[in-house]
Image (tube, rainbow, N blue to C red; front, side, top):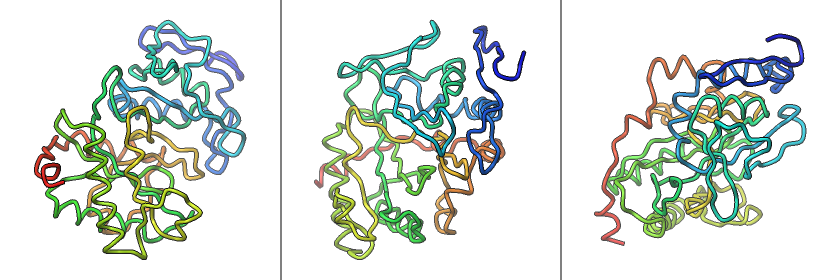
Length: 293
């Protein structure tokens, strides 16, 4: 950095201006913008893999996680020449497919990255995702609930990878063979959701309105749809723990893993040790389930 409030870096041949590198973004941990950008570089091989060729929505926190934030769907201006964009429903989205683009977004204090469920110019889902969303801010039953959903999927001969949202929820990601439609997967999600709410009525709900859920955990199969987004694997989250959305082993779910245990300052060590658990999962056929439905 050339000076305290501004500097330049060269990333893959592109010169980027970094503003306010010492600005505190996560006050409880003292994480500055400069440290954040360093962590983004560590995460980049994995985060880029899961955002590449998808429509990106970011959440920006210009003055840190406790100040005002806003969703950024339209690509912010001025747009560097290396940034790729794609238009969907009149919105010009950033396509996060390079390290310079990631660092540029990080400098804009984009602290969260939410990717579409499908690729650019494609109508079909890239995978199947169920969002398991607690109704309470602190929900000690979340991993128990995810374990029960995993057991139900096992009975359906479906293999899922659990992933912390980085906030309070957990997502179940099912790698699939290409060719299924969003409508087909929504039918499978509704079937699973109704089975869970019937089997465990005090624990699960498929009620969309939060005010009507009580303390039950929401099995959200509706979010998975064309044009919608969800927190990308390995995105940081604007939470006090600087948590990162992280794929888990099922043994970690059984042990009651805490999403706050996976964060910017330790995620590299985990990735160095285990690699990307999602990338290791093989696409699977859901024909046996869909034919039944």
